[in-house]
Length: 124
Image (tube, rainbow, N blue to C red; front, side, top):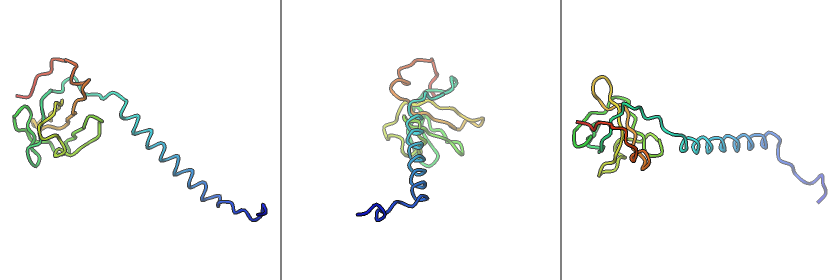
């Protein structure tokens, strides 16, 4: 083959491929970074074993509580999950309630978070 017979990729195609690669790498880095940053669970959060009951109802230490509209449940990796994805046997979590007493935010605890003692009261 002669040098003139070698086809070179289209310059715009190469730029597009580079942009896609960079965006993909940034997305992977952002996901990894989110997993290593400490979570900011408020000191006022209460600790309880949470179980999904039905619809917008969860149980906190066997006490039925309603989820607030727009409630966020975060798993151990800090990803937002649907309440029905909670383990059926329940899991230790910390939670906040809104002004109406509905559960508005939930953080499923990692082993390290569960080991710390902050004197948080359990749900009543």
